[in-house]
Image (cartoon, rainbow, N blue to C red; front, side):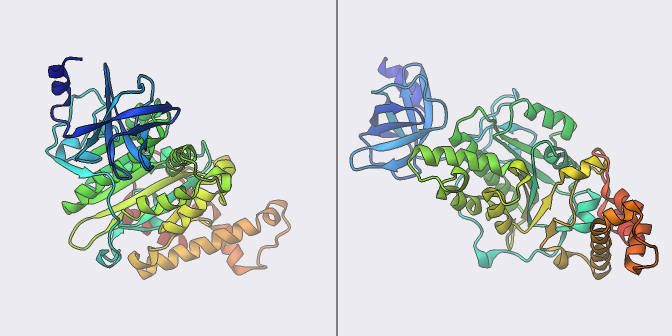
Length: 432
């Protein structure tokens, strides 16, 4: 290759003057030498007709392993390896609003390159504990059963837990459309490629105003899927630093964890529960704790969807996520049989901060709703076979009388948006 052509290709990439060489190519990683990188450094591998990026994931005495962001096809022994002096960053600014981008900040929506002046490192430390602001403001999501019974606060982190095909994506769309947030950042990690345009058209109505979509589909490399989540969080943090209250949504934590499982096992980590290496459980809080409310800035209210395999809530990823988050919304497949959409099981769900943001009358109405609804579920068989005699239990009589109204309260058309005030007023009227 002509030296002039090589200079032209490297121009503007901010690469190190020195370079190393690829000495071995294996499925999932490359071995190289000739440089002294650190763990986590970003490198660019360059050969004739091929350029790719990777991350240094293992160091040895005279060599280092690179996990590529793309596939290894086209890479060969002897290819040059340059250190990227800027590290892993994503472009940020008002220019990214309304765009669909990949984890490297490259536009994938066919609308041309993004000319953002700013950039944020993808890996950043979470908010320091003593710099976190108190969560004391309501975050309206426009879904009755959440606003009324699982009230969220600005800066809260919640999980949406469900098996496959129960309605996570539909509920995500309802929250994105109905949430009162000026900026919305959505991360689609490890999902099918066809779901991306479907999500934009069906769940967002084709409207990406004030919305950023960061996409790493299932056919992307594990490193792209892993860092897609961190990249999306960095975009949200930029707008939070501008004083905005940001809605962050990620689908799904499980695919993110699976990407780290692939990386960890390829690097020789021991598999633990369900084949997940220890690094997966370490990685979840590093991502989730970056959401929240920070003093002197805005807030990131985050919803993370978790795919529960076989509807098993003791799944290690679901269990770890529940312990980190400030609340969990459980979708129940059995509720769909009764025509209740979104199928939120309010008895198995909880918002840990509802008591800090809702008023006393609202909290009392929500507690009464839960108590009556729980009594209905406990005595459902007796009621259906006619074994329960009216008058035996005053509270159960009230629950039976209000059964229709309570079930109607849990239902909502996927295209409807209901204000927080209306949701609370309706709840209080039912429980009065």
